[in-house]
Length: 155
Length: 272
Image: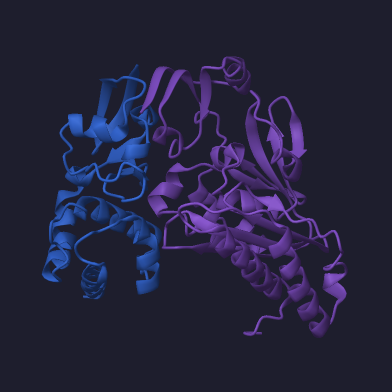
């Protein structure tokens, strides 16, 4: 079957099998930031944005991307670099496997909640699991990133 | 592994209904549960092009399209105002935002899953399922009906006077619930729902009328009635054990959550 969609801002037409998962499809197209983790819809490693909303690509058929705008970390390199530095500086980047999903969901959160509290951050990111860092340093990194962005806006 | 031979994004409910009459066809919801099993589908029916992902309301009711995501339910202001935040409470613990953006209300309700927070919450309100051919059926009836080949189109929640509290117990955040509980006064009538027993949610029949006239009781009477009813529920709600909790633990939880939920509904919890 044929689908037409936007991948990281570029309109594409692709031929897919009806049961292809979005995760496999995106990796086939070179989006290696999209990681296969638990495959039980629990870990958030495969998070991508579909029409600006974060979804689990391991549980979404590629067919559902038809007519939609899909964004992976490859489409947010600049923004991700800035945020990623804050996360790394707080020691939250250990194996780094969860980071792409984490960062995509942080961007989704900031679209929904302009100035989230620590509690809101923890709740919004509860679907992103990290086996290394225990979330404390990640939360610290996000809060520092938010402070930095606020200071930039005010300046 | 899920295998699909044909994928049809239907243009009408009639088309979906016709396709769904074959045993090897299935309606796709959010896919988060379906993709976990080993299935071979000759035809996967996708309703996502029919605009059934909206929540609308009029003076009498909320109409929630079957393809509405759990996240949209969770952040819907009108539903949360109506339920005093219970709707959000019933959903916010389900895995993560990304999961709830995928999972649909139709998939959650139609599946009548034992672990369903959604089913427990909707049973605590004056809710109906609306089928393409079968029309409207009270959710309290639907929950015990056999699965057929009709198509769940909408969930309906009547805007009757409602006071409701939703509680769940989990071994760890984002896990399946060990027990779920809704206590509500639906148009003044007490209703208690227990889910994740681990069997599907059930309305607890108050055969002894322990909560009758609950809304007119004074504080002391309410406290007494709540304690009696919580004990009654623990004795009469069938629960069993599984890898998450034993039967004994679940029975204790039935009592505790029922008491706490009714205390919140009656405004007699320790915090008040």
